[in-house]
Length: 210
Image: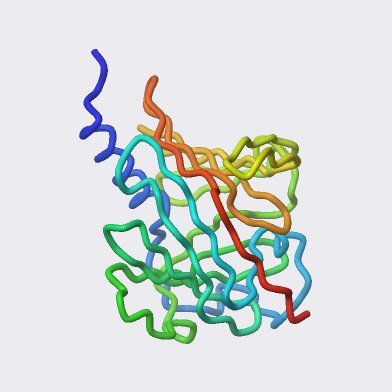
């Protein structure tokens, strides 16, 4: 029997909660911080102040969202994400071997500078080496780079040579696609024959200071 859209939407939101909320960790020494060091991962997360992305959703109301970088300090940057229902603050750390979300705060409508807040998250979004088969796990989820030459069709055209990351929990599956110099291109949640997707429809990347 085909699942209701309401149930699928609930499962999608639950998946996001599980997949993108890591364990609390107030010891930032766990992460290697080396200022503005060069990383092969950096081009997949352009981190200039003012960078903005807009994603067109399909399958549920809150699949559409926007992202904007509002604070940057060295290899830490803060992203405001707005899906029309809530706004969140996300602080990311880029090191030589990983891109990690180290802070998350929901319902963050004032968007204060959180770059120096104690770390409360440890979710690795992308890990080196950038090659098919690179895999990492955390709690009840696993992530793996399954393709480094994926093509993604968007309202802006086709993006080639994208990294495709598979994210699995015991009951759910998601794929994310990243393009060098652009960032996240597409996210799709798959539940049986149903798909909830968010695909890039516009973006603005400011020149890097480096």
